[in-house]
Image (tube, rainbow, N blue to C red):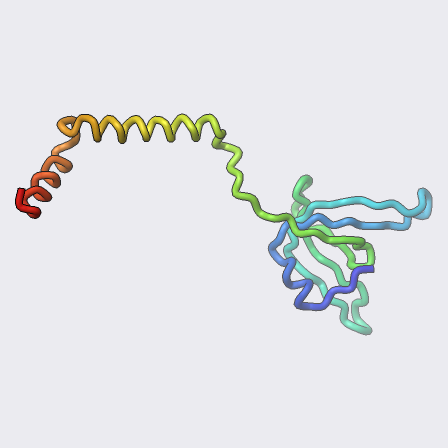
Length: 133
């Protein structure tokens, strides 16, 4: 049985976590299962009123309308999912080609200053005047 303090339990609020649960099934015996949930609430035990503290969370892989309960007495382990900076919509190949395109455009602008826009030409003239050339 996992025993969390209020500050420990509060650190999981809003986080996505992997929870390993162990149950005792009267027919099949004990078994373990893993769930990936987004923790949206914590229900604390209140002596004499409610004795079963648990997390409330939405299953990441099977979302539902209402949150599921993960009772602390069933939790074997809990592991926060670390956020990544991976963006699956942009592939490395697309990223590389856009970099080479930008590098090519920058080289073209440096090689042919006359192809620059009016603003760039005016800025160049003002710079030359400012330095006295």
